[in-house]
Image 1 (cartoon, rainbow, N blue to C red):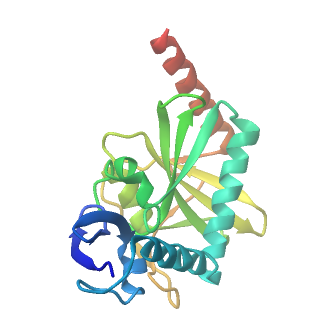
Image 2: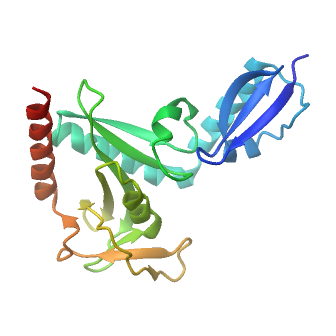
Length: 229
């Protein structure tokens, strides 16, 4: 019977590389690996290991806590398909998609969420990378964005990094934010888990309306096309 002969944890990618019979098999996100109850010496075939990982992936994707962000991801991709069809969106899942090792390795810290990379359609030319935040209800005139989303965008020094806040109620709204290279003061929301937020409003220089963001992206697309001629 085949068995696990080696396990290696990559702190940069947040994945667990699993070797069966001394040959590399898969790289699994730590949160999924933690639920598999396996260790060095566990008897398991390569096919069965992949089967268990896939089953947990499906289970994880069915959790209610994932639905709001998944719905938001889909809405953002739909927005780009409608208004900026020259771009092609790629959702990067840092928790589960170990097939994107090369792409994920371009990010500077271990992550446990998702974002969207947007490429000029039909090319490998990345136009922007987009951190995604969700607000079920907009609170007053301010936009509350989780601090880690701003920090992730700021840390991507080699990328054109943005944050989009998807507000669902009272009316659906996309708020496009281009963080500056500075330390933002954060606040806490009582009764909200992981409650460190940074607030913006329509007067904040970082905040772009959808029309202004659209104009910015169109200009970038034209610049790329001219450069590539």
